[in-house]
Image 1 (cartoon, rainbow, N blue to C red):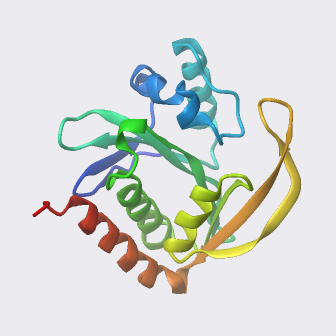
Image 2 (cartoon, rainbow, N blue to C red):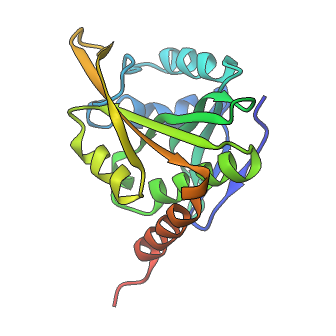
Length: 196
């Protein structure tokens, strides 16, 4: 069970719990927020509870709710999954943020905290991230962070609408983490710097 809380300057990543369902439903049920998710969009609190319950029960996951420090609001969620500490690998995903938080420091700092937890606390050697081949915005963001494109798994999974998706894979290795950490810290600082 995940009991670790990760504290940053703008967000706190706290272990995901069923009690987060109501706070996460508005963002998760937003079609624009959920557009690239490979699972059905939750539309009710009961569906949100079911989805979170499945995530929390998965012993290969470390799931977090993202809480904004300025006002205490739960603004999103992110996870490590397919975590295999014996092999030193994990994937990062099931990440979403309220649309009002897009472009702010929250996703970058969440990645900074989550990647640091994986590499520094759990001893992971390899982190992978994947996205829909149509989600070019996500692919560019991964490249800006210094992640390496590994390839595309063709017709990898079915989207909720029944169409087939190619999954684009990126990765970050432990020896690449220090440079990526610096880039992430710089992005957080730039997004939180006062204007003027």
